[in-house]
View 1 (cartoon, rainbow, N blue to C red):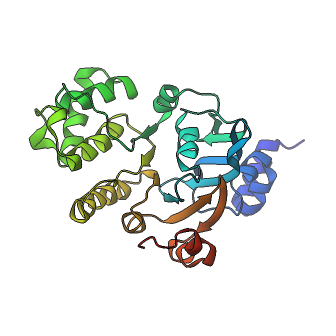
View 2 (cartoon, rainbow, N blue to C red):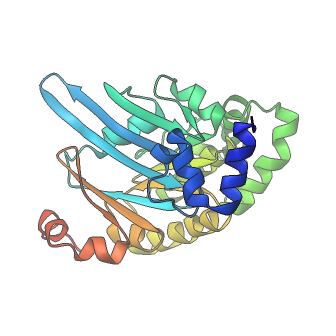
Length: 275
C-alpha cells in the first residue's frame, strides 16, 4: 500500500486546496485557505460571568505577519477577548490555537515562553529600575535568556524604540509617550512571534500618536504578527491590514478596513466617533 503521508505530500504539490481538505485539522484552522498559516486562531470561544456572556462563540484567525485591529464600543468584550488570548482569562468553551497547538489551558507566562508578548493599556514598568534594566528583566523571564545573552538584543530594542538615550533613566521618570515606548520595548524583549497591543495609543496627543504609529509600522515591517485593540481609530487604520469589530461579545464585522468602516451597522455602533 502507498504511504498515506507520501500521498498527502503528493496531493499538496498537485493541489494545495485538496491537501488542506485532506487534513481536517488544517482545514478547520484555515477556512478559505488564507495566504499564510494562522499564527493564532480562535474557534467558537465563549466566556461568561454568571448569566452575562461576554464572549459569544467568537471565531477568527490571524495569519503570520498580519496586523489585525479590533474595535468595539465600551463593554463590547474587547478586554476579555484580549485576556483570553493572553492567558489572563480561560475560556468556558472553544479553542485557542497558537502555531498549531491548543493553548487555552496555558498560563500567561507559559504563553509568553511560546512567543506571545503583550502590552497593557496602562503601562506598569518597574519604576525604580532603569529603562535598560526593565528590558533585561523581560528578556530574562519572558524569553528565558541569560542576562549576558540578553544585553545586545536589549540594546538593539532600545535603539529601535527610540529609548537608547534614556537607557539609564529611571522608568518612573519617563513621559507618557516614552512609557508607551517602554511598554512596547519590554514586550519585544520577550522575543514574541505574536504581539498583543492593548490601547497602546490611549492618552497620547495627536503628534505623539503619529510618532507611536511610526514605531508600530517599523515593528510590522519586521514581519511581526500583531493583534491591536484600540479606541484611537485613526492610529489603528494607519497600520491594520484587517479589522474585527465586536459588540456585546459577538462578531459584528470583519474584513478590509475600508469595507468594515463603511458598514452601516459598524457606523451605527460608532456614531459620533471621529474616524
